[in-house]
Image 1 (cartoon, rainbow, N blue to C red):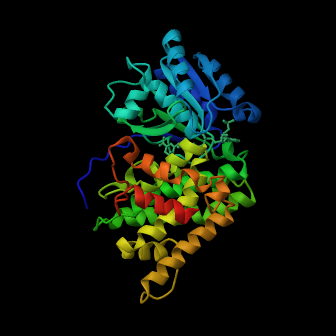
Image 2 (cartoon, protein in one colour):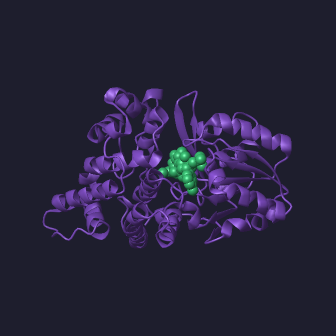
Image 3 (tube, rainbow, N blue to C red):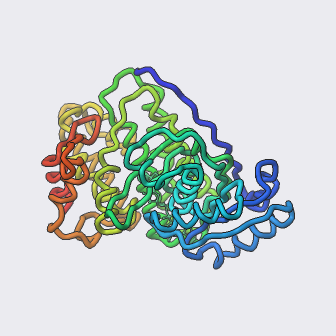
Length: 392
Ligand code: NZQ
Ligand code: ZN
């Protein structure tokens, strides 16, 4: 096990009706908030009215900025920063999924930053201050409700970069599984693929003597795999949502990665797909993850055999590990298929014409400073291209 520094404060207020408590929850921290949300689902579902009623009841003033799109854009972040400064906002309330939350976090740090907030994403330099962010989660997927991370797309530069700071950990996140009932099936499936990937990125490692985080990761994955198909059959299944929603938070609050070298190659490779083709993050991951497994598993076959046995429930003997691993990957693909997720880049609408460009950009080779991706196996741009080709 490697040395680590675990700091994961995240207040999660969970359960039926909890969104109505939001005014009371943030009252001690805010006189005036920016209400930040996406393309309007919260108005259709009636959540918007409930939030406004709760803010009014608690005497909290607000200004609002909707219109966050999936793969949230820098332009709206700039607008939000201006608005917060002009209106002396002291807290941002994001109501939505990873996109609204990440946009809120970008605004929260941009308010106190003198230059263009995009600099922070490009340089990764530590921030000194950010407005507090509170959340009402409407889709469990990105795990942004418990992470200090934000991912933003710079539409002008065609780049999608992430940034993390402990100062961006949400003050409080409200999670009511009933709010997930209205999600379209593609979003349910993409969210599930994303949260599973957050576990894979930490689970697949060359670090040894990490039994506890291995077991916690496996249990979280098994919980998702057992419950997620029930949501495709019945998106109003509260109990299944409760399991999947909580698992999505555990997947990304940091605990599962402690003491182990992490990977993140699939996420880096996927961010290039989202930047170039605006694909849904989780759908991109469902296509790339099995391709990545096929490409790298020989570098640590024991790790992948453990996955096949403990997560995918393969019960074949251990004599032929290659066969065991192949069966594990096939079962994962079968699960994605059951969820209705795409299996190839072609199904995502991506042809072969920009694969090399994406591989060179993803590893930064394109910008003259190649930085291999991954931990379990270091991937240079040619490796990334090979993986994109397997996924074709
Ligand atoms: O915009 P609205 O109208 O609200 O519609 C949204 C959106 O179209 C819809 N939706 C959300 N809740 C709904 C609903 N529709 C009906 N009923 C509901 N209850 O779902 C669509 C997707 O929303 P989005 O917020 O984009 O989804 P998600 O949570 O998957 O977020 C994806 C973003 O998070 C980033 C991704 O890269 C992507 O940009 N990530 C952020 C991370 C982090 N901050 O820690 C880590 C992740 O790895 C990920 O990269
Ligand atoms: Zn993700």
